[in-house]
Amino acid sequence: MSNIIRHISVLLFVFPVIVFGQTESGDVEVITDSDRSIPPVDRIAMRPKMIDTAITSPVVDYPLLALQAETSFEIDRIEPANIRHRPQLSELYRGYAKIGGGSRLMGLGEVYYNSLRSRKYHWGVHAKHLSEWGRIPDVAPSQYDRTSGLLFGKVEERRYSYGGQLGYKNYGLHYYGFDNVDAPRDSISQRYQSIDFNGFFDSHKKDSAMLNYRIGIDYSNFMDQKPAEDSLSKWRGRENYAALKTRWQYNLSSNVLLSNLRADLNVLYNDFRYGIPDSSLTALDSGYVSSNTVIQLKPVTSFYSMNEKLQFKIGGELAIDIHDETRASLYPIAEVKYSLFDDLFIPYAGVQGGLQQQRFAHLARENEFIGSNIQLKNKQRYEFHFGIKGTLSSRMSFNIGASFSNNRNQALFINDTIYSSGNQFRVIYDTINTTTISGSLSYQQSEKLKIDGIARFHSYQARNNPFAWNLPQLELITRGYYNIADKLIAKVDFTLETGRRAKVFDSSMEGVEEQDGQFYKSLGVIPDANIGAEFRYTKRISLFANFNNIAAQRYKRWYGYPVQGFQFMAGATFRF
Image 1 (cartoon, rainbow, N blue to C red):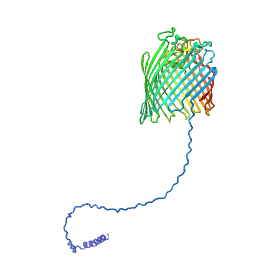
Image 2: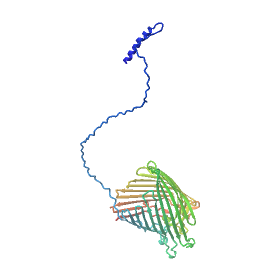
Image 3: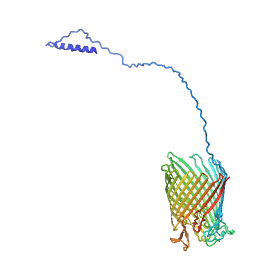
Image 4: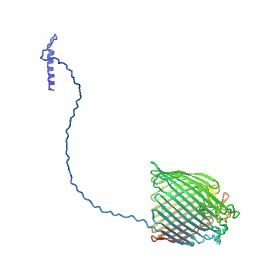
């Protein structure tokens, strides 16, 4: 830096001397001592190249130092836990017996005898007898007896199970629906007997991708009382029923839905005979034979969402009815429901139809005062229903719904004035459209307190009759159960029905009304209240008492048939 400054200062000093030293002629002569020769130019023969110099770093080696810290530990002693055993399962007994008696010479006897806990074998026997030998005032003798027996068994294997049951029933009664206290009992007696058998083979493979199935067979022989004269032994109702019932089920799953594929294939055969075909006992009483075969194919597919909030099924039923002529019918099956707010509310809707084979045994079970000379027609039903059910709390649940159904060949019971004096019933068939609005409310506090309330309102529209004879319009049902320290158990139930109308043929009777040229009589209000109590003296012995129809109402469930008034029964039960 100092050399540069020095050269600059010399130039600044010499420049003005040169300027002011010029002569007017303009010639300047400079005399210096210097070498102004030009050196020769030599060409560089080497080509430029890159010289890569690798600079190596010294490797520093750090020796490993073996360091060992002194450690120590102590093992804390753990005291053994006290394991409390779960409560043992309640002790089972092979036998149970119940015996009692009551007002109007009532008697009750019942016994069970069955196997204990077993993974493979289950079997048992059940027999029961109930009878009453008293009388209802102002009507014909009304004694009855009911005896039944049942033998059942089942074998449970890992991948399948099979079993069956054999039953016998013997019910005796009297057609007491007329005012004659001195009527001979034998002339108005009736007795139903049946032998029933069913067996099944059921596969239950654990793998959901496997096909599971169930194959069952049913047989029933049902008949009413044999006439006193041997020559008339065939002039009674005799029915033989046999069925082959199968079910095939397959489960599928995906990332969105779980599905269940199911198909039922049933073949039902029923043969009913009254008297001798092509012959007559009287001018109005002729022999009758009805043989009917029904083939049903019912495929149904059910779908469930992964969270099981949405559930719906869709399918149908193909029914082939082989009677006097062969008819095939299709019926829809569809239902959907959705869970809201963790099952707080579950709306649902569906449509369902089907063919129901009519049997003499079913009609006698519904109205035991029917005669033997009846006709059987299969019932066809189409129904649409919707509603909402759910829970109001952890203890209370509800169900509100409505349904609209079309019932073809609906069986109706009217008093028979053709084959009897009116103390028996015969069956007529009609097409009836039914609208039903129903609601139920249930409350349950563990196993201590249970209360149920059910209400149903029916509206009927019959095609050929002004009313649906002997069917109720309003039904109210209330039931209660209370358990006090598992020692004293109280039960109560109350039933109320209104709107029943009976068809009559005598317009001169009191309270008879007319509609569309037919006479009828209202059966009024049908109330029935019952109370029962059980005191468990020990685990094996208990005492019970039942009070039936505590309001002592002699209402008529069927026209001409008043029920018993107040009834009382008490007894004891034993386990052995």
